[in-house]
Length: 594
Image (cartoon, rainbow, N blue to C red; front, top):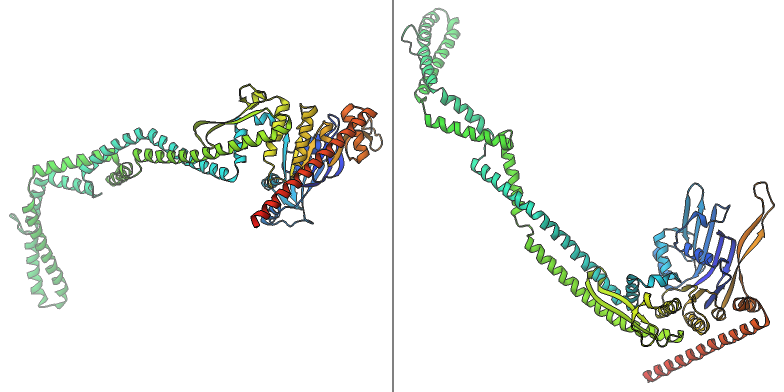
């Protein structure tokens, strides 16, 4: 629970230190006295949005600090975040400063933390109920959150399963739609690749040098007659000359002369050897050229075939080249692309089947969630009606309507709170049928439904009594007191009946005070400040009288005394009822033990 609140230089507050108690803490004061400033301070400490206008005029720094008692859950949170307890306390603070820019820093037990960590703490520390929540409660999403929260952990876990199933189904649906949109383009690409593959397969490309080799073959075939004639001419020059001596004959004559000469001079033997080698090479060259000439012949069909193949390769290169090597590489690439488009990847039918399976799983998860919601709806209806009876709404009708809708991440239910405060009148949506006072009481009853168990330590109600008076206000006061037995309650109120039930009563006032001396820059040294006073019994009687009648007349004080006496009776009645309940439980345990 909230133990203390310290404020420096915030709005109209210069310095303020407040100590709260368990049970029901009430804040009263005139409209505009600054009661909401205290709630704003608590909100800021636990993550609310900071504005430069929140700093007290003339100040560049504000400090807000709240101390809470520790619980096992809070001790676990501190251990998880490596923060030590501080004298068995949880101290949350926020410092806001303005220089060139607005700066803000959160601390827990003196350790700097981030906003996300503060948000985690807030869920365990406080829950605020304000007038504006009546509008929010009229929204379908807020009503769904209330029902799911009331359903507890099993329902919330199933809703998480629905969220996961919806995400899977949505992803496969998106993939399926994309696949369908791309299918036409895919089929067009397959046709194009198939045509190119057929053409390249028919070309039977394998050797990147084929075109060069064919061009050389074309030259040979085109000049076969010339080659045959010229080879015969070379043969004659080398070996058999019809007119004159051939090269071989002349070398043979030179060889004979050199043989004779070397008999007389051995120095000529190397020259003889060279001539003999030349003669051997000429004879071999003649033999080879003669053999070549015999093989050269005109082949028109081969020439036509080579020309046709070269034309085919040139066309292939123009389309897929520029070189034959590039065309072969392109052939390999489109083979891979074609395999990808026509291979064993997911087909449209497979995707449709997967999407249908995911949708079926989503529907199953939604059906389980709907069943849990129906069960929770029945329990919430019973609890709400039970809580509304003491609030002068004993004839009220309330129903949680569940209507089937297409599956969403929140399930397949449209949830609507239906309400009728008057017998004989049909149930209508809560936001359309409940008056302001009825909505306030409904909010209070809803909080009472969630108040069992651990939950947050401190419940804050900001003018939950708006729009009510008389016995209804007394019923709200009693309900707030009952809530304060399981939780600390902070309540801003204008109702004397509610204030009379308080365990601690704080008066909020605006006062104009003199601060410092006048100066040339300031025309006056007067400043408005908000002051909060913890009232003793006598001061409380005076404040209640002011709230009840606007003045502390004897008549007003007499009325206040009756309110305080009535509050004492409510406390005593609650204590007796609690004792009786505990006694019944003890007897039941004793019987069970026996």
